[in-house]
Image (cartoon, rainbow, N blue to C red):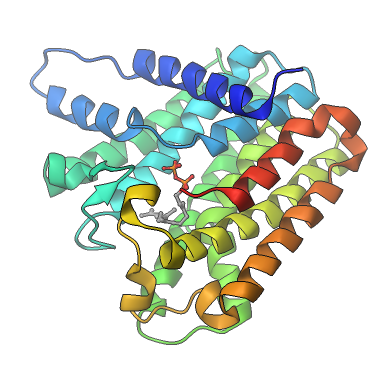
Length: 295
Ligand code: GRG
């Protein structure tokens, strides 16, 4: 039995190798763009979304080569969102994953273009026949990932986050915002294994339910780390939400209740996996990792 830490590290290595091959350096005049794309994707990160894709794919005995391609595509989208989120027009951050943010290392325009190019490259990968031989599966992946990343998902959530800087949010409003901003990409990473494995709807539903609770637990811990963590540990500036007067799960619930809520959601997430029996052990371990992480 491979333990969780090794499995997470193996997934990270596999995705790094693939990203390295998918984003090759070249000598053309636009090489700076590729350099910025590589800088923003091959710079560490916990690789939680890739782990969700590969672990859910294993539930349905999906070829891991296909799963790794979907994992790399979702990581490109995740990294694009971080690059754009760090820009001066958004969160204006100088540190990400312990290193200068993309626009600090390059410049704003290059960071915008690197994000754009990562997003579009992700869909090129999803639509490529090497990702799955069945075009209906590839179409399904493209549609579900587009919904999760776009105006009804991550980008819409980011818009709500910007609006929230100017008026206080209630608990249901914050929950909806975070579900869109971070939850939907996490959810589609979980569901991707079911899509690749052509799993029936009730099984895909169980994965979505797990992901829903996991995504909220993840976000609550992110809010806790912003209050309790240090930049050295977390790899980015902390204390930003409070300084901006932003409503978060922690500002509304307080530290102790937020921590309890995250633990409760992780337990609830695990309960949705019963149908998969022992095969879902890595996903159960991930739920525990998400609430215990320090970065
Ligand atoms: C700008 C289109 C656009 C969207 C931005 C996801 C997002 C929306 C912004 C990221 C800002 C942020 C810190 C959100 C909190 C949750 C989150 C996505 C944290 C970072 O994810 P991790 O912890 O990061 O998985 P690593 O570095 O480990 O990959």
